[in-house]
Length: 420
Image (cartoon, rainbow, N blue to C red):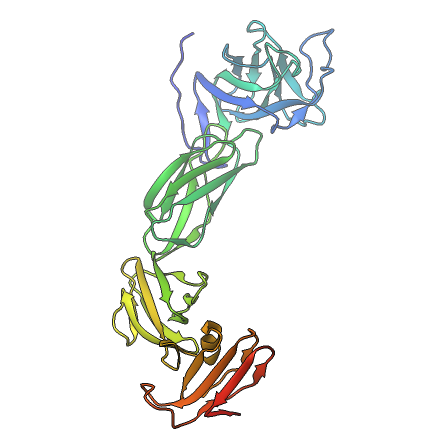
C-alpha cells in the first residue's frame, strides 16, 4: 500500500491539531492504566464480550471536507486482538449508542479494519481502539502496542495536557547533580509521548523522553545562584504541548571540609558555628563551610591544661583564622600545667596527681588555689605538701584547696594546705 504525504498544520481554532491528508500511521498501546469499557460487537451472534472492562483508547478526529471517507486499519505489528468502533458521540457507560461503524478482524484475524463513507464536513467523530480478547489469550493478550493507519481528510484533535516540574533536591550545592522531573498529565485517554525540553529562560538545559507520563534530565552544571527553570512538553499526534510554571532552583556555593584534632585536654570551637570539638570525642570535630569563607577557631584548655599552639592550617599560639579555599585540617595542642609534682612528673590538678601517686608518695603542690573537690579513696598513704614556689625550689607559702577534701580510705599528711 502506498503511503501518501502527511501534512501537519496548526489549527486556528481550538489549539493545535494534526491535519491528515491521505494516510497517517498512529501508534500507541493499551495497558492497565487505560480506562475500560464493555465493548460492542460488529456482527450478529457475537454480542458484547463477556470479558467486560476491556481497555480502550479514544481518538478524536474532525473532518475537513463534506462526504469524506474515513478508513482505519490496525497493522500487523499490533500485539493484541483489536477492535475498532466509530461514534458520532461517545459515552463509555453506553457503548452501544451512537455507533457509525464497528469491526473486529476485517483486515485478517486478529486485525480490525473500519471504513465509513459520507461523513459530514467540519464534524467531530470518535474512533475507539480496544481489545477483543481477554488477557487469557496467550497469542493475542489484552494489552500491548498497536499500529493504526488512518486515511481521509481530517484533523486529529490533540487533547490538552498539563506539565509540572520538580527537582530531586532544592537547594543544592554547586557541582551536586540534580535531577529535574517533568510530569505530563493527560486529559484524554492516550499516554503522552515525545520529548520535554528543560529551559532556563531562552537557554535550553537539556531534553528528556516522555515515558509513563514523565521525562527527566540530570545536570551538575548549574552555577551558584537562583535558576528559574521550566519544562516544555512538545506534544504528539494525540496530545497538545504544555509548559510548566517556573521552578526556582537555588544553587549554593560549594563547601569545604575543616577537620580539627586535639592533643592533650581541651576544646576547640568555631565562628561561624560548626566545630565544637572536645578532647576524647570525635563528635563536632569536622564540619563543612562555604568555599572561600573564613573560619575562626578558639582553643580552651581543660582544668590543669594550657593551650600551647596550633599546627596544620594554623601555626603559633595566637588566634587561628582558616581560609576555606580547600579542605583543611588543624591540630590544637594542650599541655599539662606545672601545678603539682609527683616523683618529678607534673600534673595540673590535685586529683590527677593523686590518681598517679603510689603508696607513700609526696604530692608537691604550688602556692596556688585549686578549685576542685579532692577524694582520697585508693587505700594508700600520701603526703600533700603545699606552698611551693614556681620552680618548686621552696615551699614557704600555702596551697589553697577551694573545695571539699574527703578521705574514704588510706591516709594523708597535710603540710602548708588551706581548705576553704
